[in-house]
Length: 211
Image (tube, rainbow, N blue to C red; front, side, top):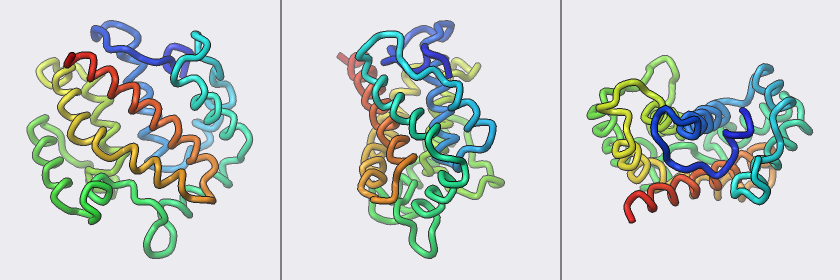
């Protein structure tokens, strides 16, 4: 991550670094929500830029807090926190699936609707990953693809807007709130804070497009 990737991002043409920065943030968040960070990602946090280029930028404080927490904790502690929050014995403390946050049930109608939209985009689940398509990491990876992919018929602002409105904006902040409500959340409380701030920036960007 470089400093361009942590500022409040606008929407730009595909050859602009800001668009690639948006894609990189979605990619980073997908990695963090899919599994605890590996040694390589922990090392990246140790050398990551901790300040945004513009003082007071909306993403600056949550980014700094997340980086600081990942530097403070070791990888085993973060992995144990991830398992306690999102795996656990029996029912996890927090579900990372859109269907649950939208309907109260896993594998419900929101997942079916997501699968229809993914098929329209020519995308399908990777069976080797073991998670359903409404996992937060999966929908973030789809957003990354829609921003940075090469197929301009699919990877464009309108497709981004429609997917974001239907399958990200509708529930991800509620998921972040659920994480923040857990007393044992430390590293992932900061991931939730940064995720929420980024989703709010994205929401504002799409709102401006529609104004």
